[in-house]
Each structure stands twice: as C-alpha cells, then as structure tokens.
Image 1 (cartoon, rainbow over the protein chains, first blue to last red):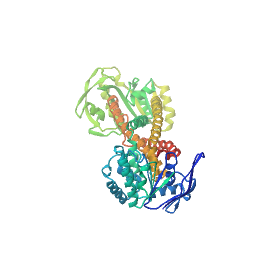
Image 2 (cartoon, helix red, strand yellow):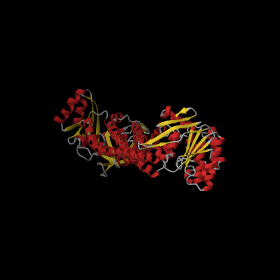
Image 3 (cartoon, rainbow over the protein chains, first blue to last red):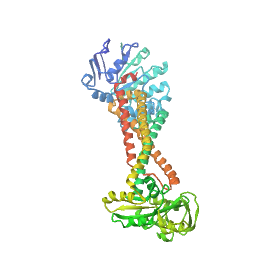
Image 4 (cartoon, chains in turn purple, red):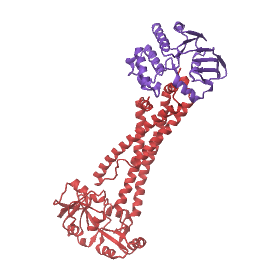
Length: 207
Length: 386
C-alpha cells in the first residue's frame, strides 16, 4: 500500500508545492489531473524516490522513504517501483527484448517469460527483436508498459502515458494499463492533464 | 542484462568517432612500439656481433670505420696491415686469442672473408651441409645460400672491392653451408687467408698482408696496455668495439629519439582523443544512464559501464596497434634483408613492450573514464528523464 502524507517540495527555496494526501491500495488506479507546471512530475519523482523527500512522508509497503538512505531507496525502486515516462523509455542501442532485460537487471527466466507473455497479450511480441526507433507511437507506449510491468512492481507510476496518442490509442492504452495493474495487483498512479482518461480510474486527484 | 554487451553497443554506436579514436590510438601505440623495438633490436644485433671481441686492429684511419668494415662488414676497410704485425700480436702474452681477417673482395655484394676456424668458432657456427675445410673452398652463410641459391660444389668468382669490381680468375668452390646464425655471419663467405692471397697473386706484396684482426684479452690489464701500445708503437690502429658501439648507438639514438618524441606526442593526442570520445559518449548516453538509475542500478554500475566502454576502445586500439606494428616489423625486416642481407629487428609474438602498450591502453581507458564519471555524478539525471 502507498501512503502519501503532508508532502511538500521546494525548488531552490523560491516556491513550495504542497501535494494532497492520499492512499493507494494494491490493484487500485489513481489519476492525478492537473495543468502543466503544477508539480505532477515532481510528485511522480518523489514517489519513485528519484527526488529526495524534503517534507512529509511517503510509505510503500511499510518502507518509509524518509528513513531510507540513497542506496536503500535505489534498491526499493529497483525491486518494487516502475515508472513509465512520456518519451524516454528505451535505450536505443538495445532491442526491445534487451531493454526488458536491462529493466529487470538480474532478472530470472520466469520474469523474462512473464514479460514476453505480457508483450504477446499487449500485441507487441513481434517487436521483441527490433530496435525501439522503428516503433510507432502506440507500439512505444505498449512496449513501455511491458518494460515497466516486467518485474511485477508494487507501484507503477506513469507520466502522461497517452501524450502524443490519438483518441482511440489513448483510450486503449489507459484501459490496458488499468486492467494490467488490476490483474497483477499493482498500485497504479497516472499523472496527466488529459481529462478524457478519468473514467478508467478508481479515483482522481486534482492538483 | 549484461553490461558488457551494452558497452560494446555504445562503442560501435558512433562508428566514425570510433574510427578516428582508434586510428590515433593505433598510430601512437604503433609508433612507440616501433621506436622502442628498433632501438632494442639495434642494440641486441650490434652487441651480438661485437661480443667476444675486446679489440680490433687494422690500418690507421677512423676507428668507427674499422669496426664497421672488419666486424660488421658494412663498410670499406681502412687498408691493410702486415702479417708480421699480426704474428707479433699473436705471441703477445696479454692476448688470449686472435682472429685474422683478410677482406676486400665480394661475390655479388656478399663479402668474401679470409680467415681460419677461429672465426667460425667465434660465431659458434653450425653447418647445414658440407665441411668447414676453408683451405679447399668457401663456407657460406645462410643469407648467401638463400639469396644466391648456392649449394655444395657450386663455383663462384669473387670480384675486387665491395661493388662490381674486376673479377678474379680463381674460382672457389662452395664446401660448406651454414645454419642461420642471426648475426653478420649469415651474409659472409669465408675461406682461408691463403685463398684470398691466391686471388691477389698479381698484386705485389699482397701475400704479406691481412686487413684486420680481432683480439680477446687475457686480463683486464691488457685493456689498459694493448690499445695504447698498438696505437703508439705500430703502423696499426686499435679500436675498442665497446666504445665504438656506444658512439654508433648514440648516433642512431638521436634518430630514434625523434621517433620517440613523435610517438609521445601521438600518445598524448591519443589520450586527449579518448578523453574527448568518452566525454562525448557520456553526454550522448546520459538519458540511458538516467533510465538505468530509474531501474535501480547503482552509480557503481553506471561507472562500470563507462569504464568498460573506455577499456574496450583502448584495448582494441592496443591490440590493433600490436598487430599493426608486427606487420610493420615484418615489412621492415624484408627491407633490411634486401638491403643488408640480414634481418635487423627481432620480431616476437608478444614481448614486454606489447605488454606495456596493453597496460598503458587499459590505464588510459580507466583514466579517460574519470572525467565522464565526474560529469555523470554532477549531472541532474532526472532532467534527462523528462
């Protein structure tokens, strides 16, 4: 379970962003809506531990971020947290298959097989041996989902996952993402300014 | 995921940059290898050819020319000396051994030397075929046999001087062929002094002369007394190979020093080039490194990736330059064989210098990764994820 309580973040001491408190259970999907510049991505990086916590508390399955050192936070992220980014999701010199292996680190054969099955379920298994630069926008988003879900994370964070997609593809991606997390009991938090996606999520938070 | 695989992909991602960096590495490492090997081989070859000779006596003139002509057989002799003088030296109590040298003729560019069994013993010569019966003909070195295609029983006519001079009437039969000795012996044709004199029977007084003599001292005291005695009291000059060798190496050393200086400049350029390559590489891959950080990779893994990349490039450069330099040595040796009838360089499969180049290459690689690592550590990786 993810708990976010009293979290604030200040960039260079100029302005402080206060984030709403929320809780997210396994398999639940939360949509964080808000216009650009309101700190959506900042919250995502705080939740993933890529930005150090300045104020408040974030807890993921009893791990308190404020009590973890950078090495422990790194290990927690490697084990339990995945992030889907807007564009930067692949190492271009590696094939899709190799990108999955890179994301898994010392991944087992079962984890790899699970990822290949997921790729087949999402209709991107034919891309496994191809390089990401040859993917279309929709294929990139689905392939990114495979990479992110490969380790069956406890928490999946997605930053504008439907950006640059047309209506049809945006609907499909959002729907598959929510279903996938429900099936594997992954807590999902999506930050977006795309209000069309609201209907797919259990709850919505406004920034 | 194997990080080695990823670093190999990075290495070959920018092929033009890689080619430029490798080109500089290969040129610099190979230039250095070439200069140190030439210097080492020259020293070894010269030392080998003069070892066991404490003093050379010959006609007055330049001591360097005496060494070049009568020990290395690469120059014209300074003149002749009387056999009487040689005989007197032979009886001198300070002399352990003495080898007479009568020269001045050649067969198609290969020097014909009049001497005795002591000369063959000096080189520890071994026969491929025939005998060492110098009185009945000539014993030929390995390069002579190979180049002129001579075998036992073939007859040759020597010409006067070092080039294509007047031909002597007396033919000499090949009685022995020697094994390769990797010394100046390979390019020599040896016969008895009597045969040399017979060739010059029409020259008045020629049978009373030889060209030079190699002397080995009986004691260190001889070093102090004999050269002075020869130079002061006889019509001969004494040259000490050890001293002349040093002079010769100093002369050739200045040329090698220039090559070395250039190779150091090249090495610095190569170091700069690999630094620039790695700096550009880390800039190019910051996004990937940020992604890996997001996947939970420790900074040590990212540093390892950069070190591996630099290591692969520099090792590749070192290995290619070793191969390149071996090829260059072989070409140079062919040239030396054609010019001097003997190889000049000792080509080994893998020697200390190669190991030094490999170590330097790896060291350069690690050094070249430091700057990119500092850049990576200072970079705000999250900004590359947006």
